[in-house]
Length: 259
Ligand code: DGL
Image (cartoon, rainbow, N blue to C red; front, side, top):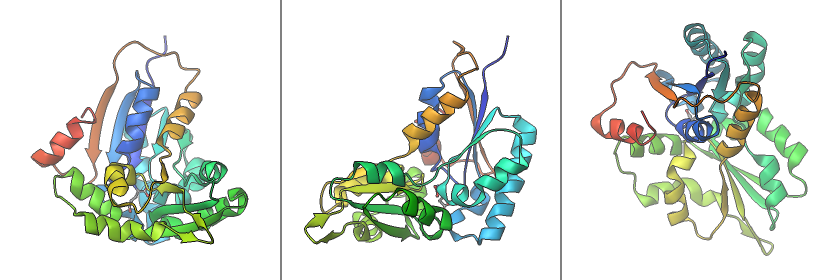
């Protein structure tokens, strides 16, 4: 009898937890390993060549050690750059996280959509190609944030970030021109759903914030559909490449994700 699948969820830090929590709901029996490459956080600041090498190296080690049945790259900054290379290098299936431009443009009524991600993600050819292919008549505005991923990590670790700081990073997402206001904002960094309530608080008007995590979880479930669902509860572990021990505040936050 086959045993429950092992799923490796990978990010530069803890943003991938937003993908992990959805994936866990979609595949309750899986054994999850969450790997945060916090020794090199934030990925948004890394040069492209260095990032590809780093992700390949960290995943090579983790794949050899955990032998996952599937790897979720829960990071837009890494996926938009390294996904095709990872797929050709490793035999295990990969599910990536890339900006949800297609569904955002399909649902926008005002035809004004913003993609909010790291500066690296919004600058990538991969993201621009998605816009060329899927904008379907929408004006797509790109906003690269140098700080939001750090703010999300700080908040998780119990360090408060004030509203003005959050507003400073998100204000540029809201365009009101030619009688059309932005109505949909793509959360193109997995850290950002951790700040969603804060985004809503400082937003000048109501928009739909598109979190790709449910779609990623569905894709994972689909790829593992041949593996029968087991009744045993999921096992989960978290690893940090820095080897750090979480502070009490962070440990409490991690406990809310079941760690
Ligand atoms: N969570 C990440 C993403 O989805 C990366 C943030 C960073 O390390 O800069 O892009």
